[in-house]
Structure formats: C-alpha cells, structure tokens
Length: 334
Image (tube, rainbow, N blue to C red):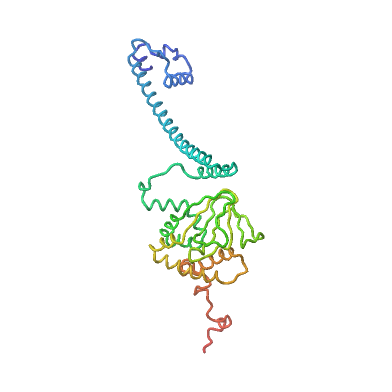
C-alpha cells in the first residue's frame, strides 16, 4: 500500500482511511488484512501491484492452512486406527465369551484383565530390522536395566561386562498377572528368576500366614533357580492387584554367558559360593537368606575385590611390627 502511495496513486490504505490512525490501530488493520483479507478486496481498479500481492497472500494462506489440516487429519486417522484395533480386540473377546456361556463374574474379570493389558501393551510396533542389534540392546538396557541392577552380581556385570549385561536384559520376559493369580507356588520346581515390576504382591513362606507380607516395590525372588537343577520354591507369591513381573530363565542366562568366557567364569565362582552358602542352615527366612548371600557372595568374587579393594587389606594400612617395637630408640641395635 505504501509503495502504491509513493507512486502517487490511490492505495488500499487510502480506501480504508488508515493513514490517519494511530500506530497500534494501523498495525492491527494491516495484520487483519494479511490474515483474512476482505472480500472483495479494498483495492483501486488500476492497482495491479496490490492485486498481485492479494493473490499471492491468498495462495500462501491456502497452502499453510491446507498443510496444517492435512497433518491434523493424518494424526486423527492414526489415532482412530489405534482405537479401532483395540475396539476390535475387545469386541472379538466379548463375542467369544458370549459363545462360551461364561458366567457374568468370570466375564467381568476377563474383561478387566484385557483392559489392563491393552493399556500396558503399546499399539504401535516397529520393524526390528530398521535398527541395529546394538541399538536394540541399548533400548533393552534403558527399559529393564534398572531391574537387573537389583541383583548384586548383575550390577557387577554391568560395570565389568556391559555388553553381556545388555544381552541379559534382552532375555528378560514380561508377564502380566490378574488379581489373586499365583506367580509361583511353594513346592513347585523353580526354573526362573522373578523380578516384580508394577503392582502389589503377597509373599508367604512355608504356607505360614504369620510370614505373609506385602510386596509393593521392585524385588527379586528365586535367584538360586538360575544356578541349580531341581530347585524348589520355598514360598508362594501371588498378585494382589493387576501386576507385571520380569522373568529370566536358566537356559537364557547360560546361552548369554557362552559368548563371554570371562563373565561366565565370574558367574561360576559366584554360583558355587552362593549354592554352598544357601545349603547352610540359617535362622533367617529363605528369602532373606537369599538376599543376604547374594550380596555376600558377590563381594567374595575376585572381580569385585579387584574393582573395590578392601582398605584393611592394603599394605600401607597393615602394621608389621608391634607398637612398642616401633617406639624403640633408633639408636638401638640388635
């Protein structure tokens, strides 16, 4: 508009009577003209320059709005697709249950469990071939490493053998349990390590109600099952709410350690000491004994002692002569 005025012709500023307005009002008027130009435009019939600018402004506005609408529509389609997938799964389960003549109470329990699991499971999957194996293992470590670090020997493995630790994290399996479902039962054969992730659990040792306790945080159970055959559960763990548990099988641990002989040697020394100490009688509960022996046996490994040497065993802290002998006059000769 100012360019047309400088040429001595009538511009849209003159038609809108905007030249006599204050600065703020002129700015608002110009902004409104750019964002939403009036139709028909307030342009003199012979102002070609302003008509070209008006056309370009409309084209640019349509392009920007069209791009934004396209992105919003694409996002809505993706959200609708995810919701449709979940709705289809719920519908299929309801149809199946209705054909099985299941009781209302059982159907309610099943549907609650389905809702919980659908909320926990990501509806989006990715092609694992798109990322390298190294990046996949790093992803597993970021997701599960905090739980494996609870075990002293695995925490030591993370420091000394980070690649092996990552492969162990990749072998973990997630399981979901409903309310009052048994994770493991006393007397059954134990073949896996169990780590509680979310939810609340009831832990009872030797089927004694006096030993019943509530487990709410992250805790591991039956580590001994990773190192021995025919290990029996000495307690029962059941879910008090919808819960998630990570498990590690003995075969998966063995397969992982085969690729790292030094780490396997450390695990073997630790496992021997751990099994021997667990065979000793103890006044502690079985689970408490397992937790304490795991920490104790980890400290006994050669790798741990080299990494964290005991100050008491350092030569400079050892007194080789009795204190009285050290105070003898230096001029004294034997």
